[in-house]
Image: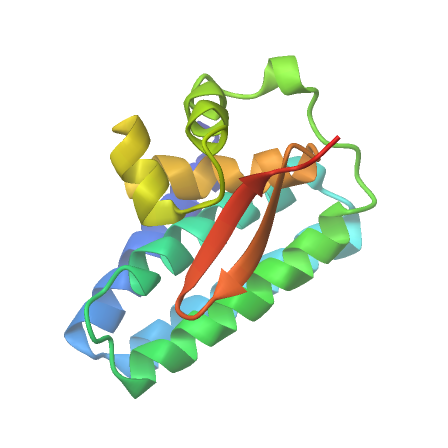
Amino acid sequence: MSAFEAALMRLGDELLGAVRRGDWAVADAELETLAQEAVGAIATGRGDDLAALARTAARCHTALSLQDDPGGDAMQRLGQLRMLALMIAAARAGIPPRPAEALPATAGAVLSALKGGPRTCPAIVEATGLSAEEVGGILPELRAAGLVRSWPAGRLTVNALESG
């Protein structure tokens, strides 16, 4: 794990902790930092950093969407994370994804779970035994590689194997 990825991991943990505590000023500051890092990575064409940012945004989004009755303030941050993830995905669209054989081992477990049909992240976690962070981290890579497609369904996101 690079120093940048470790810093993003801490940033994500601090964001999630702030949301759990209801400390909206800190949560907003962490979201702003994530957005600034994303803009910097986009402006300078740092594809690996964009991938790490996508994993962090997905991990935080997944953790927030799995909360029971998160409340309006947390839902606002969830929407901001979704928009940040969309911005990162759009920027990454022009960057060739890692080849399927270069994806982490967790990718195989997620793909196997999706062979049975579309699933939400909690269902993938249950089917694979992986953590929500692991599943949330690999899904952007699988989407970028063209292996998985996703769409929102209420508070959750449904994932399915890409046909063809």
